[in-house]
Image (cartoon, rainbow, N blue to C red; front, side, top):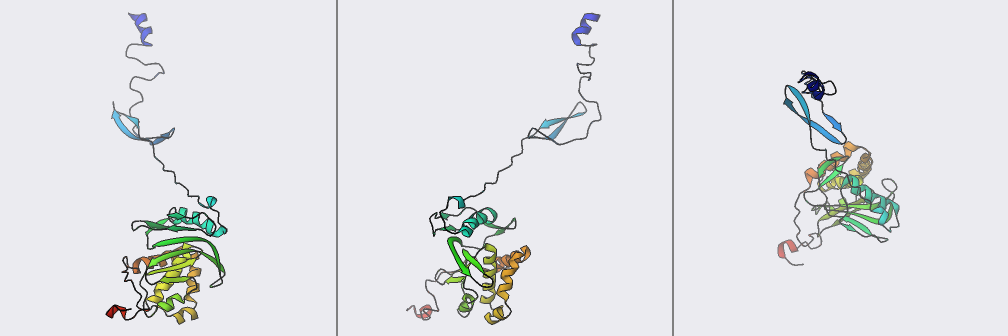
Length: 266
């Protein structure tokens, strides 16, 4: 038995294996669990076996790649600023447009759904807008400081019959469709449009008068405040709080046809 049996086992029967470690692996007491990553795989589970801890292979971590929208490179537009802003708005604030017209003087349009969010400074907020347009145009606007307009943002709102003209007098970049009940602001960014629409609501609700707005240069201050993240978020939250989710469409404008409401006669 002795020498022959000793050679076959690589040592005494029941003794050490090749490598010098006893059967059973590591010594007792090595119970500190360490989570590792090895070759792209995550090890994050442990079992107890023979008073030792053994690592088990877990599932690989799935990292979703963020797809970057690049629309501007495929456009035959004349103006560079709106081309660039399509990619900026799509990637940083919202998503790819619903309509894309690639030709010169074209337009990209977004129609937000009720369950969609807008992203401001990396944070998601419920959407208040009904449409966004980015047009191949560069409208020179000298006030409150020189810039160019090309990006439109729409909200649903029923403007006051008494104050609607004051709202439209805030800026040459404000417009209203009284049948659709859609108010829009046009500027060079969604932040500036938020500031413009915020100012419109203040005037429409009688919080400030047009004279006060112009004398104290409130509109200019609101536009300038878009340089500050906290101010933009404050103004957007005011839109969220104030705007109605459902604005009834009557099919007529009372200012144009004042007798229709009562007599149904135009």
